[in-house]
Image (cartoon, rainbow, N blue to C red; front, side):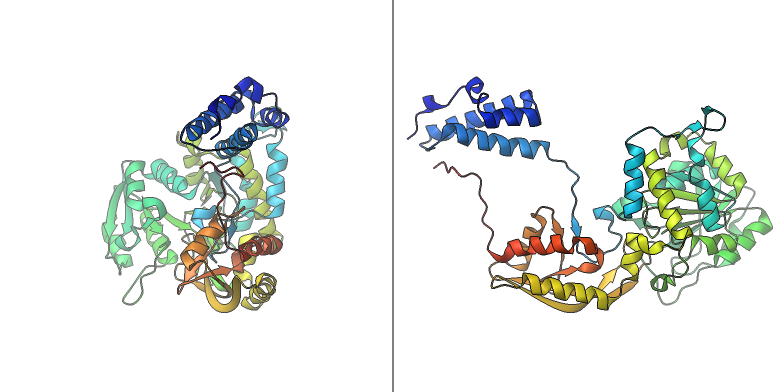
Length: 466
């Protein structure tokens, strides 16, 4: 049994070269605290009869593990192998390389966020990206806030507080995180006026509900569900014509942010441009869904409505920063110059199953071993993020089987890698969908899978206290 009196003092431990390196990395207070805790932990273990060949090294190693755990960033890069392109839980849309570079460029210094370079005086931040948004969508005016929920909230607060907003019962949806359209209406100060039924709402239902208290007609994208069968829903053009008769603006919350009219996989998804052309006075959509940019809520349409929203006191609470504008402008430029293929989301949706299968075959050949078998099979990807509900994309999946790990344990093991690999389990097997793994990450993914060739054994330290 090792004598507890052999445990060095904290000051003595701090003289060790490795501990000095820790202080340079983590700071003296944090290192001293870690040393004290690990010395006390070791003292208790020795009192129980434990042994340790090199006490100083044991404390040093354990302190490093403690410091690494405490100082680790909570946000981590992961490999999305789920096949869900716009994965809300995994940060939605990855930015293009050019957008990420532009963010880094502007984040590292000062910029003219609220400075008018021509006048040499204070400017407005809410005008950034407006011109390119209007060119791309055909809108008269545009404004950006921090997400589409904020866009809906401030639009209703500015345009309909204390008055009625007509909404179909079939569009009173709840999306991820418990976000409900009726709750947004309530918080905005607008009064909800429900019309129609869950599956059928006609133009005549909206017309019958219009009174002198009506501020808006609101149309809401069904987001993450689709009703099929005996259904009816008025078109944008029909509702816009009705609104024009009674001088009631139509606001369409598209959510998805689809602007690429030439995307075959999204042919049933309404575009922002067409929605405006069909008469919507204001269209709301996300920057980080089908648009493939940063988290943002974008409002486009009538200049008078947009200016009214801009003047609302909530605008300061929901405004965006320089990094959002930086990423958004680069993303929009890619669409405007027919370079949508540079945007990861657009590239993933357009990827052919054959090309995905070729990548999966190369990966399978590389990682196949006695411990790990890899088979390429047919499967389906989803777009996700509340966009194109019900739409699927044919893909090729890499099905994994481990000699000693069940599917559940293998999936857990994948999540413990660095960086974590997020997979899914289909029919009792772990599968990886390379549609949502960037091609540049294939080598990294292969290296991570190669580490699964031998059964994982958790180790805490090279010194074992018994």
